[in-house]
Length: 100
Image (cartoon, rainbow, N blue to C red):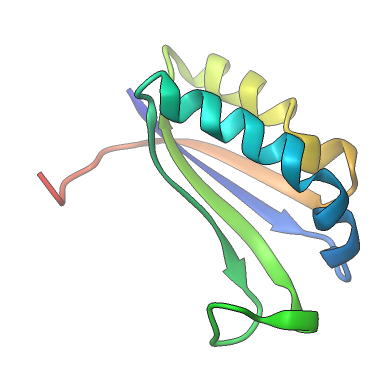
């Protein structure tokens, strides 16, 4: 089943994001190689693909896991948590309707 993982950043998280980004992307690339990743990306704080110093307010990941518990366990191990980027992470079952 698919799950959405929504991370909400601490204020002024841009520097910590930079420090943990390679490890964060490594885990996402692994999901992609396994054919489990639907989408992933950050939420810019401003209406721009490159928000510069404004930074990001969070991130969204939609991926396939065997259970809600497995998705939560995966999310809890995200380097952005240990680096102090995310202040909160919400994991929920996700039903993809479109694109079909």
